[in-house]
Length: 216
Length: 216
DNA sequence: GTCCATTCTTGAACATGTTCAAAAAGAGTG
DNA sequence: CACTCTTTTTGAACATGTTCAAGAATGGAC
Image 1 (cartoon, each protein chain N blue to C red):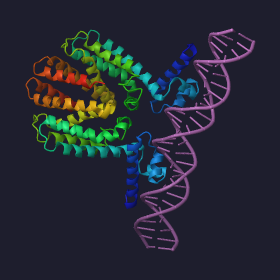
Image 2: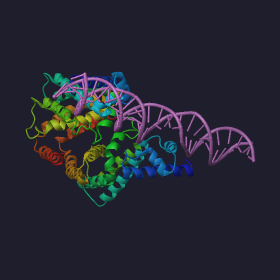
Image 3: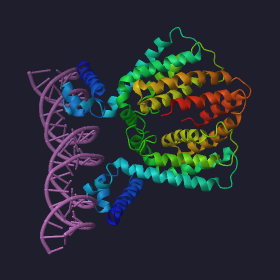
């Protein structure tokens, strides 16, 4: 963990991320990463146990980028619908460079055993960061208090769905995803606001109870 | 496509599926499949272009099993909640042998480019079968007619979510998934029935419109 | 039966993620 | 410096999915 080794690790990581961005995930070979970084294949594996671990770093970086971009985009914006819209668009914007290898990412990320799994231990920090993004979204909006504690996580889950949709979205500039965001954000906001109504509230409470009961 | 070749193909497939079930997906090698089936590696690849294609067959088979099992389980059961519950439990039951390599399956299945993608062309037949399952579920229950055409596909989407949850569910016998089904089925039924109410209906209609607008 | 085209079979070769034992470099101790 | 222990580096070796060119088997046309 000394100066020298930390430098090498960072060098390998930067090289890898750069190559992922330009060549895509599958086409970027561990050998090529090592060569370009000027270290041996074995050295690359000394610092990163697997190619997936490299992607995990990318994931962390991307989550941080998304949160930062979302914070900027929401600045001065009021109301849940608009804040949500701004945050999601900013998030997707930040993801854009990775669209081409989104499939590969999902393939590595979703399997439960994977270190990358958004639900797993290794990515807890990143996940908390991502859920925190939706804390930021809610911040300063009116949310029924019985919903408040669970809402960020629910929104994060929904966002995972949006990201999944985005991965599949081959329309130019992912326009369909934009349409989805523009349509879904006001819907979610209405749903949240309607959750106060006597007809709806029990339903929502039942759903929340189920979520708690079923939670990992 | 003659007698002989069809036989060889079926032999390879059966061998593969059997080995997937007993050894798991990752541990089952193309070489081992070929050897056990008594053909050369190249021959196996003559019939199946990739290991994934083998999994696609497994998927097709499994969907058919799920639908059949669900039909039996729903026999004589009335009401959306109960029919849904029965169908989902039967579906998950049919999936049980595959739980161990669910992760591998997802990893192969979800990437958009994959022949296996549940949303892709190659699996259209299986998907239609799966959506048809939820046609069976609705059959004979009271559903608001403005919802009726879209409901099977929506339920299928939700079911995809349940399956994803199931893949991650490491509790004994996937008990958490069972809990989820038992809780979610009545919720969905209530939601469907409430969708008639004047407060809720516009929301649902907006959601349906968005779905149509965004659809692939 | 002979010939040709198609279908099927084969195993070697390839690419790439990963492992590992050995060696080199570094750091601390006397 | 000499010795030892740890950290780092290395490239060969391995496993496995996949490709491919060459050959064998098959089936029809004449």
